[in-house]
Length: 175
Image (tube, rainbow, N blue to C red; front, side):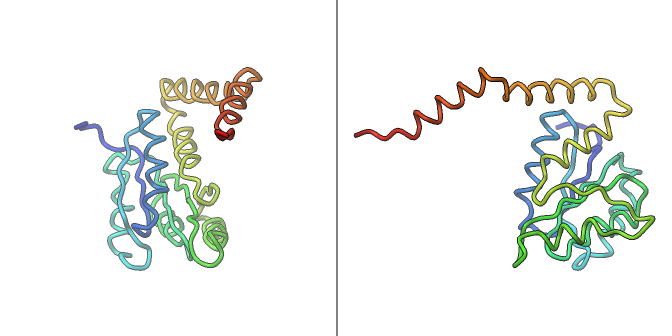
């Protein structure tokens, strides 16, 4: 077990959001960025949420990623209690499938900034956190650059042709 403190705190408002959190955690792990996960609610555990965020920087946290659906107050509440960068991930839930969460996460008052990624955008939240952290970490910056090149390589004509053949073969059914 690593003794390196987590540099990214992943918090979600409900256990139902954990799958999206795990997408973020996996991406951070691929980039060798330590993280920790907690379930904290702006509404159900407000004191614990505020205390965790207020102490985050002392515990080595450099970026907070907050996942929440519906009213999605978690990112804003977090940003109100720290000057660390906060990234909000609206989660798809309820009748509006995350649109309400996206609006709640984006519409912060002046002085309480929250960066917001797409609904269920855990992977992009991880990549944004990594970009923030890479400003002071040349090795991480290099890992991000390699990942970007690998991602772009998927769009090379040769790679697309291989993917097309694979998918066409998978669609063919035995007679």
